[in-house]
Every structure is written in C-alpha cells, then in structure tokens.
View 1 (cartoon, rainbow, N blue to C red):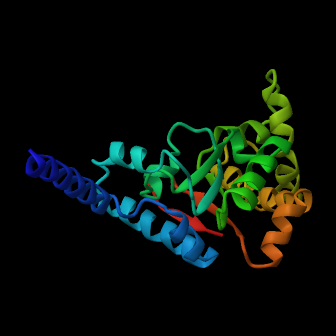
View 2: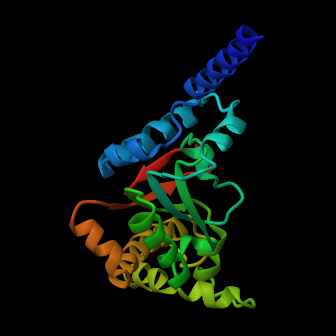
View 3: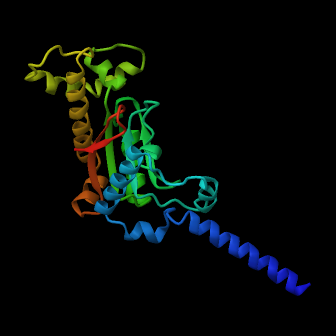
Length: 232
C-alpha cells in the first residue's frame, strides 16, 4: 500500500515536471528580474519574425500556462495599442500567457487611466518595456483626419488631432484626409511619437524609470497586410 502511494506521488510529480518543461517560457519572477529592456525588445522582435514566417510556438499547453501563472504575474512588456480587432499582440509577437500587459484603445491613445495602468505595469509589476504601437489603415486615425464627430469618440479623437496638425503643416503629397493612405500613415506614425512624448511628460514615475534605464519606451507600427512590426 505504501509503495502504491509512493508510486502515485512519483507519477504526479513527473507529470508536473513534464508540463512545466513544456511551458518553460512562462514568465517567472526570476526570469523577469534578469531581463533587461533591450532583451525584452529582442524577444518581441524574434516573436514577430516567427509570426510573419508562420512558425509560431506551440501554444497547445495554454491551459497549463494559465495554471502556472495563477498565483502571480511577471510580464516583461506593456503595450498601448489599438482596439482594432485585427491587432492582437499575443499572436503578433508569439507571446505566452503572462508575458505582457495590454492596454487597447482606438487610435492607441493615452489618458490618465492608461498612464496609471502603465505605471502599475512597470513600477509595481516590473515590466521592462513599454511599446506604443500604431497600425496601418487605422480607423481611429482616419476619423481624426476627417474631423469625425460621433458621441464619446469625439473626445478620444481630439487626442490624435495634434498629430494631424503636425503632419498637415508641410504636407504636399495629396489630400489631407482618410482617402489618402500616405497621409493617414504619416499621421499614425506621428501619433505614436506623440503618445510616447505624452507618457514621458505626464508620468513622473515612468520618466524616472526610463532615466535610470530600468524601463525603455519604444514606438512600433504593425502592418495589417503583412503581419510585420517595424520599430520606430
């Protein structure tokens, strides 16, 4: 009887070890502590290369990842990206459960709520990288370019207007509205840079983390036609 009990315990332990080895990339406190901002950025770049090539990691053990991350989260990155249904950072960067925080809002804008979330993600939860990611053919950017007025969306689009105004000043390549893909793309890229500036200007906590090289803030653009991410 005692041998049977021992054997059962041994089998369970072996199964647990096997499951853990199959999801060994799940973020741990130790792994997060060792990760530098540059290493975090490299992991994202490598993940996107796999996504574009169609060589994604085996996430068949996602349910096991849920179990392993249940008692704590130790993400290495935090994202501000668009609510667009085609922009899913977990797939785009081939991430595991628990790898990254994700704040999604139309046009990838920031307000006090998003800033507070990023402060939690970095100062409190230890993320090493903040990525502000726009994407091609963005409906939010197009709305701002066309001065769209629609309910609460009107207030949100006002946050993108400074990017529209900056690009418009010296624009000489066709119409300055949503019908001109080049203009929309230029505004989207300028908006990414604007959001990064806003994060630095309006969050003393994140600014200090960046000054002490504990956190890096980068801009990125996702191409919805190719799946490729370009870092600015």
